[in-house]
Amino acid sequence: MTTSRSEAVRSSRQPPTLVPDRDCPLCPRLVAFREANRAREPLWHNAPVPPFGDITARLLIVGLAPGMQGANRTGRPFTGDYAGDLLYATLLEYGFAKGTYQARPDDGMKLVDCRIANAVHCVPPQNKPLPVEINTCRQFLVANLETMPKLRAIVALGRIAHDSVLKPLKLKASQAPFGHGAVHQAGAFKLYDSYHCSRYNTNTGVLTTDMFRSVFAKIRADLD
Image (cartoon, rainbow, N blue to C red; front, side, top):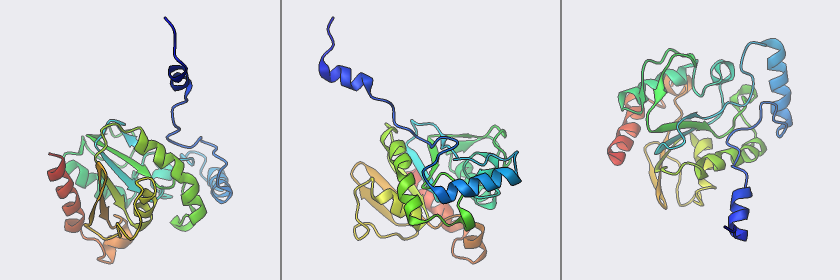
């Protein structure tokens, strides 16, 4: 049995990297911040945070970056801070998760037909990644999009996540302007926008629980 040249090339390809290495060197400012955090809190995760959920999920949720006290500490997206309290309660309500969320990675909670990733995988100072860091880290978000065979729906939590998703979907900002509750068609995918579920947004009334729930109610209806 012979192997064609094209088959040999396909078999030699390495799978895409879905998350940066623990000691990823790509963003010098984030590296320095990571090293300082490791020295101060050696028991914390303090590394790029991998996506959470099955690669075969139909729904991908894209956040901004790990929170200092949340995913940067626990190693699981949106775990250990207020944003996770609202997000996971909503996912449980609409059947995208099962179990009990207890704000720690060993709580046994599982995602159902859902995966969570971030536009930037490392915690940035003041929770504000620089444009160059967002652009550099986008390669890992693209890898996740490309390796989810059943992907149909993407939720962007906040404008930065929205803008970061537009490029791999080949959408221009003018074609798909960010707005809470907006839905954009991108080929076989739908992109759903939501304000980020941060404590700041909920405390200031920018985002209410009902506003957030309405986004996932729409997704649930569209996927069912």
